Image 1 (cartoon, rainbow, N blue to C red):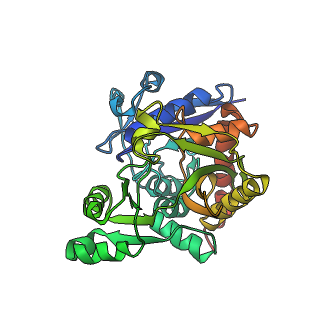
Image 2 (cartoon, one colour):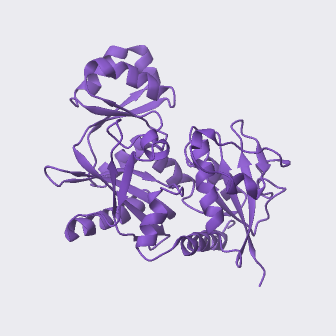
Length: 364
């Protein structure tokens, strides 16, 4: 039986470029070589797509800030044409792309739209689900409309802040302090600040606005951080929930706590929560997956209020991390699905969605 070529795309133009390299390494290592042949494509910070040797990923470890693409392979054209797949030198219409692109220009529907236009199978949500899941403001709006619990928030745009910084800050102050300030379209806690007093707010907004033109400000909740992995297309299923326990001096699950400080955090799988709470987490994770029209995979993050035990949907990750510390593969491993089977299942789900798309009529 011929093998399916799987094109692992990583790097990208976002601030999560280096974390993407770490994730791609573990996807490559988990790939079943009896079923799949890998092709590695790195996107540099200028947006150039190149073939990369396996050594780029095999040698990637440690502090992500020190990682980089080799950039030694041939540069690949990325045409946008419905009859010609992107990265024409590396893809055929029977290949499967595994995008391991965290953040903007990869997780936000841009690459997914390009691949769908080219009729190429790809792992994960489509353009709509990817775009909605990436934008924390739009995610909250849709979840609120669907009746799912979310933490109160305010939106600050770059235009509004530039026009009247004081008015923007006054609206945020309605939430009370402390608050968390986040770029609306970013992940890995890039650009996130915990603001304890009004005097700290303006600087935090400026940091977040340096990464995005929309900033989300949330009321802080004294909560445990619970995460749940979802897998599937039309019939998604949820993993056992896990918990992130933060020890880092930042006081929250910051970039440094995740990737730099080895003792910055730890995980507990399964989370030590009552059975009924775990069931509620799993049900809400699947419901969130459906409301946002996701596919393939997602990690849904929750806040569990320490005082009231209220559960809130925090955010979703449509291309969750696959690094050595990432929760998505760990949650499925503890649910009975090891990494190799998980990656194979994700590729099969991508092929299933391509088959469904190709079955649709395109003419009357």
